[in-house]
Image 1 (tube, helix red, strand yellow):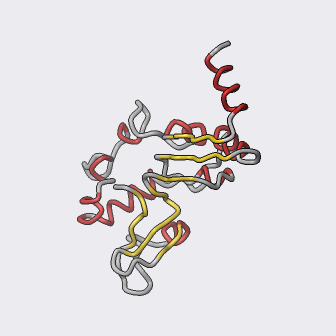
Image 2: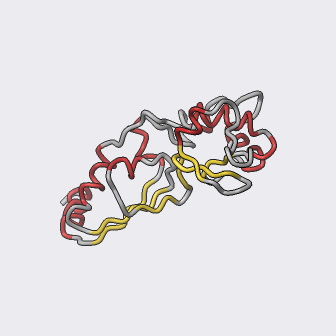
Length: 163
């Protein structure tokens, strides 16, 4: 029995699964990973800053306009759709308990229909005001010009992702 066949048999037999996913699962959906040759960290930043610098918390605080220019361009993929792997794990939920633990911030496990998901690094689909904590959704960010600001107190809105 090949390793793939062994894995398939173990999945078929199990009633409870915990799946750990990272960037590789979303690459077939058109979302680049971070560290490969074509990954985010290998791409060009903005105004001499590297992608690693730009997506840091200190950069978000000190240069929110450049942060959001890069973030909208390189971190949000609103047209990405779940691929076969995302759909497979969601389908497994129909007859067993499946927990997905992911480092991904793309929301594709949710879009595929999985329900028991732990997003370790947050999600590009959630945002909050840095002053009052008011929640915002992705559409607000995509439709805002420049740095998105809170409607209640003009605070800067931050992605609910680990920077």
